[in-house]
Each structure stands twice: as C-alpha cells, then as structure tokens.
Length: 459
Ligand SMILES: C[S@@+](CC[C@H](N)C(=O)[O-])C[C@H]1O[C@@H](n2cnc3c(N)ncnc32)[C@H](O)[C@@H]1O
Image 1 (tube, rainbow, N blue to C red):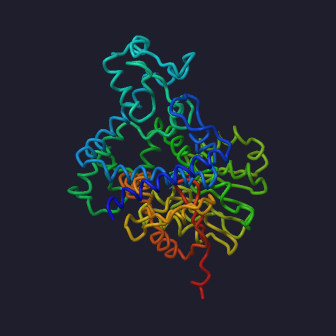
Image 2 (image 1 turned 30 degrees about the vertical axis):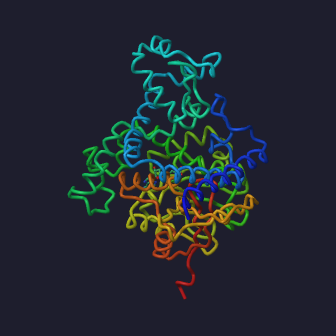
Image 3 (image 1 turned 180 degrees about the horizontal axis):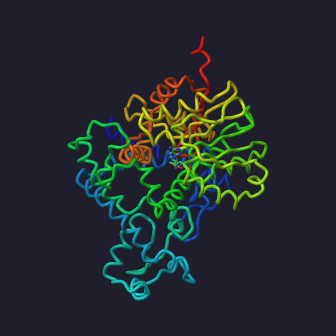
C-alpha cells in the first residue's frame, strides 16, 4: 500500500496523543506547555508517578515521533544531527557552569526573557559566544528566544537549577568525553578488544588507570559524592513505581537488604510506604560512611531503634545475612558487571536465601531490536482502557529505547557491563540456582525481576 509506513505511524501517533491528552485530564494535571517556565508534575519522575495509561501514552508518543524521524530524515541530516548532539551537552553544561540557568530562573519575570547582552555583562562573558550556545539550548527546548537574542528558561530547564534532580544527574565528570572518544579504538583495535574483564575497558584506557571504575571513584574522593548523588537520582527515577507497583505486602520476610544500596534512597522510600519492614543498606566501606550520615540525618529514629542499619559489605564476598528473615534488592547492580562477576554477586546472595526469601533485581530489560518482536499498540495500551487500533511498533519502542541502548553502551564502556534481555536474565539467574518467579514492568525504564531459590533444581 502506498505510504503504508508513514500512514501507520501518523495514525499511531495520533492515537497516542489522544490518549495522552485524555490521561492528563483524567489525572487532573495542567496542560503541557512550552511557553511556561513553571515546572509540570510530569517533569520529575522522582516525585510524580503517572497513571499507567499516561506513562504508556507518553512512551508510545515518543516512540512514534522517533520512528517518524528515522523514516523521513535524510541520512546526511541524521549524521549532522547525531554528531551535533554532543554540542547540546556542552551547551547545557555551559549554562550551568556560568550560572546563567540560576539567574534566568531568579529574574522577577522569568518568562519575559533576558537579553544576551545583560547575561554577558552580568557574568563577564562574550555575548557572541552566549547567543549561539543559548540558541543550541533553545533547539532542545531548554530555553526560548523570546525576541532576537533574549532568552527565557523553559519549564523543563528548571530541573537544572541548583539542588534539582537534573543538576544532580550529572554524567559530565571530568574526562567523561575522553572515555567516549576511546570507544572505537577499544572495540576495534586495542589489545583488549576481545576482553570481557571490568579491568580492561575504554575507561582504563582513557583514564590511564588499572583500577575498576568503582575502585577509581573510591580513590578520588572529590568525585565520590557527586557520583553517588548522580546514581541516587538515576535510581530515584524508578523509586515511586518500585514502591507502588511491587506487591510488598506479599513479601514474607521481615527484613529487606539493599545490596550496593548507595545513599539509601530506595530503602528509605520503601520504609515510608511499608513501615512494618526492617531494612539494611549494604555498600562498600567508603560509601557507607556517606550513607550512614545521610540516614542519621533523614531517619534518626529508625537508625536509633535498629529498624534501619547501614553496614559495609563487599558483594563479591559471601552474604552474611542468611535465611528466611531476609529478602534482597539489587538495583542497578547487575548491569554494572559482566556475566562472570554478575554470577559471583548473584550467587553469593542466592546462597544466603531461605525458601521464603526473594531477590528483587531491578534493572532494565533490553528488548532485541528485530521486527519479529513487534508489539501491537493494542496490547501496550490495555491498562489505559483505550480502544486503540492494532498498529505494530517495534517492542523496544524504537528510538524511545535510546535510554536502554545508550545505558548498555555506557555500562560496557565503563566496566564491561550491559543491559540484559529477558533471555539473558533467565540464563544468569538459572546459573545461580534461582528461578524467575515474576517480572514486574515499572512505570520507569527498569523492571523488577523477582527471583527465588529454584527448589526444582534440587529434586
Ligand atoms: C549503580 S550504583 C546503584 C546504587 C543503588 N543500588 C541505587 O539503585 O541507587 C552501584 C552501587 O554498587 C556499589 N558497589 C560497587 N562495588 C561494590 C562492592 N564490591 N560491594 C558492595 N557495593 C559495591 C557502589 O558503591 C554503588 O553504590
């Protein structure tokens, strides 16, 4: 049929946007606006959990937009678009570093716009450099050019204001770009091109260090806190859904152990919603010092009466919390490590399980990018109650899966880790004497893969 793909995507996008509009109204949220400099609840997944229908309609809309772009953009434009994305990163970093973001948010009438000349004089900068940088940010929707060379913050840029989630979600540690530049050499021609070791990655080549990324972070205290904070925000993006979408009341163990629990944000939110549990956060020695001080600050009573403990534990060593009293969380741990190390970590937890214990692996489930896995829109939108047409989109959500595929390359580059498909998860879990008892999709990029001892393996 003529224009079959274009027609299909157009209809699918139209259906997704209709559903999005309806779900926003049903949730009694204000309309989305690019003209507004006021934050919208949907802007912050760490604090607002959308309805399932709203989450799915938004994801589907973005998937259709991405597929449409892939369909109609010329390959040469695509190259330029992709290559220039890197400048977008540098431009938002510049707005943060100069203080322009905070200034634009503090002016008396933020949506009116501030002339670049005023910004240049205020921060002792060259307006000829500031204007192209702000225009580059405008192309990504962070700012608006309200009149020639005057700029106002858009609502989404509020995330970059000091203390807000986007400011803390900071991939730009010094030297980060050099790791990325090293990837083609590492993969194609380095002595380590066939290595799966976490000690032989683009990270070690670029940073000229023999240390595994986590050990390097520990040795560099100036990056420890910002990176722990960054990891906490990355985790927080799924926390509201983890708390709401997993049936915690069915968990039969009184204590939850968060292995490699970082700053303890997840455990804290679970305890808020389910105060009948006790909890333990485990992490590396240097990290638990930070975790303890955060927890003593946020939950002094729980720490004092033993409801919440923070303890050093290296997850490459046998798990000391053994038996039916304990269930375990591993959020964003397994994706950090190649199969050999991931099997060691999961194996130690598996050997500590009692029959009632569960392991909750919280990570992305990568979906192979092949046409045969296409999913019908109808099946995706079931929870919204919307009657959609039976269009098919790639089940990895097309270019909307870039966060999963990008994360996989990121983990590989840093530590030879990866995001795993369900088949890879099953293999890994089985190899540790476990079975997957359920997979809970979240209103986030991750899922909960619930595992228990595979008693059938013992028969
Ligand atoms: C990607 S972060 C995830 C943090 C936390 N689970 C979350 O979801 O916010 C990985 C965590 O593993 C911890 N880690 C790395 N190596 C470890 C080890 N050998 N033993 C225990 N924790 C470790 C890091 O300190 C870090 O907190």
